[in-house]
View (cartoon, rainbow, N blue to C red):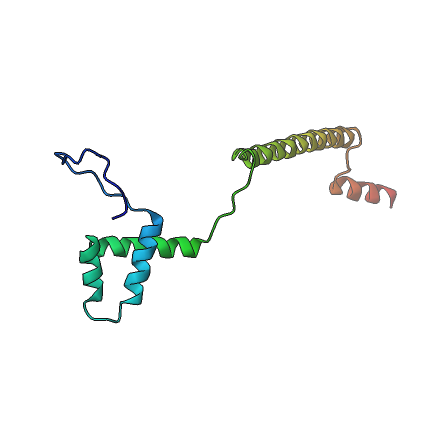
Length: 138
């Protein structure tokens, strides 16, 4: 099997512990099962010999395929980066943009207020007034 018993005295415990298998053992069994998959009855024989269930082997195979599909992750050395840094940077950028837009809004309001005051100082003549002046001058 994969592991030595935890109890070296040889006494049998009331409740057996959960079996744990090393990755090397799992890989060896999967390779042996794969090599003998065309031989009739060989897989059952291997599983009985090792004291395993077919469902265990199926789970191991799925786990191995998932690991192979995912690939080996590269491990960076040094301290781990803070996951909140991108969010903090994005928040700071949005705050700067908000402050800039507020300042532009304030300036636009001042310009509009000045335009209103100028319009009040120099009122436009109504089209009716222009018609009256043209009649008077004619």
